[in-house]
Image 1 (cartoon, rainbow over the protein chains, first blue to last red):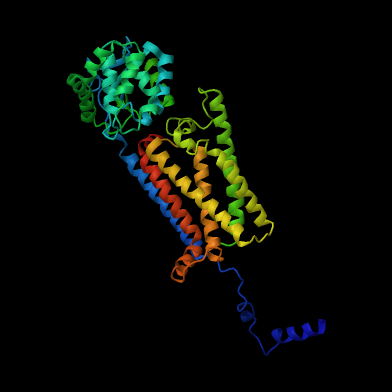
Image 2: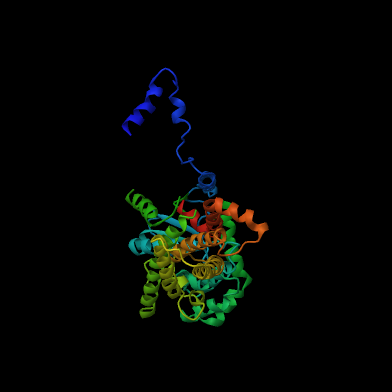
Length: 249
Length: 193
C-alpha cells in the first residue's frame, strides 16, 4: 500500500507529468451551486419585495393630498358640524373625516374614545361624514347618525355604529332595518327617525360634509386634522402628542 | 425536492396543529363567555373573534378547527414516519393525497370567504392557509413524480417542470394570495404606513 502510493506520487513531483492542476480540476465537487429553481425563487421573492416597496413608496408620497390649511378654514368646521365635545379655549381642535363602514375608522375609534375619556372638554372633537363610494352602507349609516342627531343622540348613534361595525359592515345588502333597530335601542322616536333618515335634506347634509372634505383634498378615511394640519398616521399616540403640545402652549 | 416532503409534512403538520388547537381553545372560551375577546382579535381587520362567530366557521355543523386538530396531527405523524425512513405503500400515499386535496380546496374556500364575505383576517387561520398549501403541493408533486398518481404521457413534461421549479411555484402561489389580501384590505394597510 505505502509503496504503491509512493510510486504514484513520484511522477507528479517529477519531471515527466508536471501539471498538478488538472488533477484537481477533473473532480468537481458534486454540488452544482444554486439550482435554477432556487435562483428563480429568490428572484421572484426579491421582485415581490421590490413591488411592495414601490407600492408603499408611491402611496406614501401620495399621503398628503389632504393639504395643510388654516385652523380657521371654514371647510374644516362649519357652524352646523357635529361635535362630540367643545373646548372653551379652542386650543385643540380635532376634525375627523370618517366613514362608519370603514374598518380603519373602526380601528381608530377606540383610540379616539380613549382620548375623549382623558381630555373631555379640553378638546374640540368634530366629526365630518365622509362615506366612501365602495361601502354600500356607509352613506345610510351617516344618514342614520344624522337622523339620530336630530333627536339629540348624535354621540350615542356614533358610538353604536362603530361598536357594531363588524355586524353590519362589508355587506352589499341594505342595512336600513339594522339602523332602525339601533334607533329603537337608543329610545328614539322611530317614526321621526325614519322620516329624517329618508329626508333628502339629511342626505344633502351628509353630502355637504363630503364636499368640504373633497375640496380639502381628503381622499381616504380616516383623515384627521389637528388645528388645521392633516395628521400623518392618526393614532392614540400621535394625537395625544399633538394635543399635549397644543394644550401646553 | 424528494427530500422536502417529510420535512414539509412534519413542520407544516406541527404548525397547523398548533394553530388549529389554539383556535379550538379560543372557540371554547368564546362559547363560555360570548363577550370574550380572543387573543388574536387585534382590530376589526385582524380579528379571530368576528371570523369565529360566522357560519363559515362551522360549515359542517361543528367548528372547523376540530378538523384541523385531527387532520394536522395525521400530517405531522406521516411526516415523522417518512423522516424515520418508512416507505409507505401506494394506497397510503393516495390517502394522504385525498386528505391534502380536501384540505387545500377547503382552505381556498375559506380564503375567499374571509376576504370577500366576512371582510376580516384571522391570524391563526392564516397560519393554517400558509401550511396547507405546501402540504398539498409537495404531497402532489411526490405522488405525481413517483407514480402514485398516474400521469398521462402528454402531461409528463409539465409535471417534471413543476417538480423542478417546486419552490418557485409555491412562492408564486403565496404571492397571488398576498396580493389579493393586500388589495382587498388596502384601506387598512395604508393606515399602517
